[in-house]
Image (cartoon, rainbow, N blue to C red; front, side, top):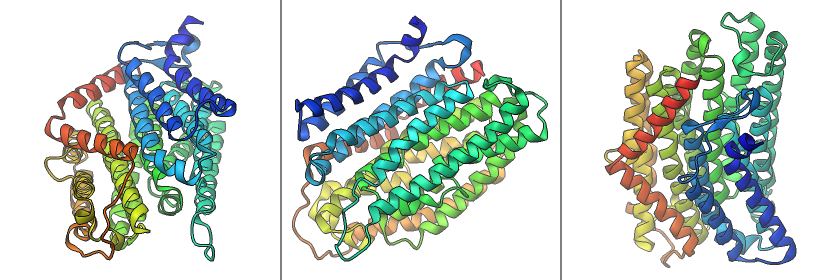
Length: 478
């Protein structure tokens, strides 16, 4: 029992926070914006506790193993959760003041599932955690179900339905693949995968990887990304665009390197193909987009392609740089979406043209958006530059020169669509002249993201060291 309590302590704390939020709301103890601040404070307390309490260990039968690898991801999830709660606080209090507790509780339950995924070493636990991560997201995607003009179709329910349908397809692929794998191995332990796999095991594992590809939004499992990003509430999309993808990366890494590490010659080419397709499709399809949310959606598809390049290397360095990339991506992409949300609240739309004159109406928001876009494009010396550079270096050393060259070529396309947004922000005259007003919580969330992107761009070593430590712990255990 003590082992269970130790390794799941942070997870239990987040789940307990969700239950506490619901209980306080039912009793009428906390309401309004205070509830959002309280939720962020609870997550912040768990994050701080992670630096003073070591949850390392394993549970009986090796079902779950915790260490530096798991702790790295848990901190990433907690940071994403805190920033997302702060970023949505004002929007929730204005649009759905009576349903704030449900929103925060659903987000916390999804975070609980994410935090379990990296340490799962049993198929049943991994699948349950993966579904716990995903199911609350379907509800949150349709949260703004009545938003939009009265004479036009509501896009909120459509966004939720598209996310649900693709999520159901993801689960179906994964379950069917697991039926083949477990039937062949006779065990639910990931370690039971044989060194000499049969054809059925290969087919089953490919279906499992495909199922996880849906959550990552990688090509060809990316169809839901632009439509869901466009229809779901932007503060939620900021969270959806980063945290579940980090969870998907954790799951895919555990499955390929921990469970199926002996078959790297089989799955590595598949990962490489998905990475190449994601980089190409994401960057090219982002070019004609006029809605910034769809543009960032396709941009996210391309960014996941870069992460998979590092994972495809199959080395400790590749895993470490994938961790570094996804951690920095949390700050960069979440910050970009929150700036777009703040601007859209004032200008009345998310189109690129609506951002015209943003730098004059709010110089600090315009400058923040520029920094986030430069980071996504990989321009020196913000953190996105180091993320791409380290990923490509790891892939090059692993012999994936072709993928590196392709990544560098298609990254040029990214400059065009990122800078088109920046041009509208700084060089176009907008019709609106009034200053943009954002709440304290939203400003704080954007400021933290901006400080992280700039600070880590100037001094990435601390995060690189943590990523290397986590990757080393993972590779030694598997």
